[in-house]
Image 1: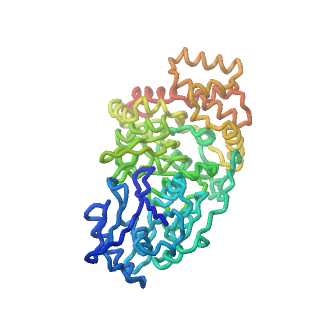
Image 2: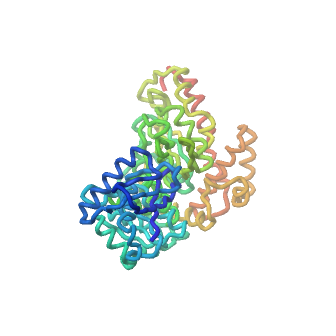
Image 3: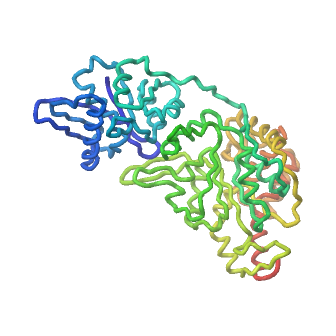
Length: 509
């Protein structure tokens, strides 16, 4: 039996080989490949766990080697693997003749505690050709999300010893259906049909979800920005494909959010960080480069409520991940790359006091304070927002029909999944291939670009959003009406609002 365990670091982590040698000498346990502090803690826990489980700790001198030796390791995560290696040393013929991954932290009583990064560890083991894994019973559901590897869940060290003697104790997960282009939704509708929300905002949110576009909703407090995004988006967002869900589960596992069997399943994540969140909390980091909010929102949504209250550095950091879909982190001479293909949703007031545009209240903000307020976003970030919904007090409100919105979004997703890429993620070359507009639509785009000095990115955003609108109607050909509506949600709207705020600073709305 060849034993492996796992050292979590970043998204990838590393497999660690566990070797145990018994030799003549004064009875003691020596460790190679762990830091001094970890050795002291691990040695005591393992010795007590072995004795309290009814086994006898070897009377020979024990040497445990964890390789690669130059890799910094989490000693607690490797307790069960080391203890199993010590029990098997000198009696290899009684154990399975396979390579096996073993994960878990030991209590002094011999009980096995749950641990993080199990999904990442099992995935890594499978890619290395390991076909058997022993994990804490609390992490069994998480480990069995990985297809192609046989897993056993254990609660004690004694149970682990029995499992390692019989391959029939390992069970392979049932094959998951690879859903392909099928589009499904959550069965849970939490009273959203009873809401009355601005019609323009509901349309903007549904188009953003249908094409995975970023969204900025601007309006005075109480106009329904936060309510629409928080209540509507989780209801109308389609389930993830099996492949998408695997990445989400792995990231949550690395962050320690799947302990106790809390598996996210196929629902896209919806993250709402607080305005005081640090740069490290949003992008990730720490001692072993854990994922931040943008990676925890991978294949889902990152909602910044009162977005202008976030630190400027946090807002500007979002630009590169929005473009590339990944975030690279470095720590202590090592680096890792997390997936970060998130959908950015932001809600903001039109000015610091929030009263601009409200006919019943007085805006007391100066032009300078409004300029500082909006400069926190910066043009490069706004350039990457496909839909800007500037709300007005006179906007018509409507009762939300989740069923109708889901039908339109389903049509758009079916087209995009058959194509193999979502509209927001289309590269310039792919956009030129898939955007098919009639003559009037193309003429409208050219006119808009010439009259407003629109950049290539602005025009690309308009093309992507108008393509989504066509897809929501089951069409792949973009009409002039689609382009006209997409222009109404373009960055020009934000620029017009910005100028209006400057002109009206310190005046009644």
